[in-house]
Image (cartoon, rainbow, N blue to C red; front, top):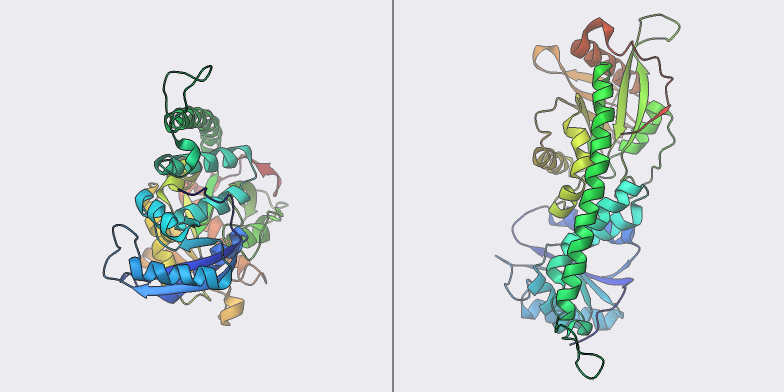
Length: 389
């Protein structure tokens, strides 16, 4: 048995083709994830299998190739772009004598780095602990049975059992705190519903430009960067659309929320931990599904987002596709309508501002269709004033 390293900065990536398609896009995304976690990519090992190996996931021959890449590049961590079972992870670490993590652990690590609010930190810690709960066995030598002797004899409890008990206690406490925060959120949500203010959530694949669009519309100054999961904590602002405030009754108020970005194969532990926050999306009146129109993989990204929306109960919430980054594709700002003249898609650039007026008009149109002529006029809160989610 070996002591598991505490960290790893030089990584060997493993990407297997199991028939899921879009391998190059998946590998490119993995490299971005690794970079976001603060590690450097030293080598990439690829292969093809009909199905994962039950013991080592990649098979003994491929694991040997990974070991050679580790030694050749002086790397200290192996990252699989797949979900590994606890047994597969332990077997791989025993074979390679280094830390091995899977896609789920990598995303959890990034979330831990990005969380800023109290609730966000609680949610990430809960997801990490629930992921760790199945991986305690034989991960560290200190999990051996406590030794006896004069002054050392106790109830005979294994260190493993102690750790599990403490972990379970912590998980219970985190769930209790998050439940209390959710009660407070429901009170604020009911207050918004009584005011007939349109609730709009920005959703989309990570790095599609949601936070940039949020800032362009609200001048909120929320953190936005060209990296995966730049935003974790939900931020909401009031937005006045559809007219000039000097013209009484001309425009409407909406509450616009910027949420965490989604990604293909988003870990279920994260979806469960962020359920309370993501419930804001499920309770919204309208979803603005932001799409990176310059990405060749945009159709798969749209499908991945819709899968997560279905998982959190938001599949039936009305959507408008926001075709972002038209400055990169040289498309013109436009509004595309579907059946019954409903707005289906808007082409814009959050970075340059092209098409933002079309989006504002669309929000005003949806607000009036939802609440009638009195939509949002009972609340004259100034644009850009913070509103808790």
